[in-house]
Length: 123
Image (cartoon, rainbow, N blue to C red; front, side):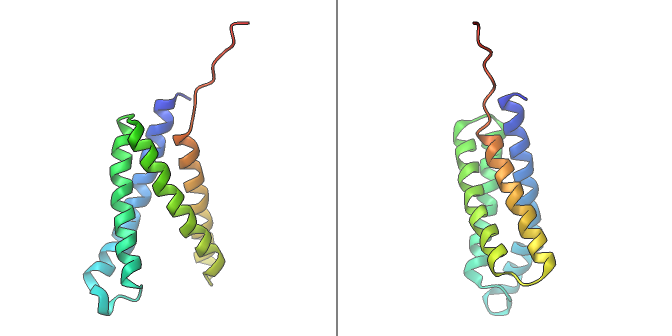
């Protein structure tokens, strides 16, 4: 696999997770507002911000820009912290499965961002 393919896969995977996060968590809680949302509103704003940053980073990574790959690594590293905290503190089996899948996703995206092509030795 080439570096450009790896970055484009990482970008596509991050866009998918960001859109899911925006549509299923961020927007419904933003519409409810701070008083009616079940989730802490700071968490809702932070989640929305990280999802928007992921979309911006994915754009840069798709265009093979170094800043896009670096920002994508940073956002996914933040998401790893969220996934690990979910694994530690969530109660239901579905939440644990989702957090596990997200942890694997974020590790895969970071590894694709760090992907290097193998150089064949001339010796």
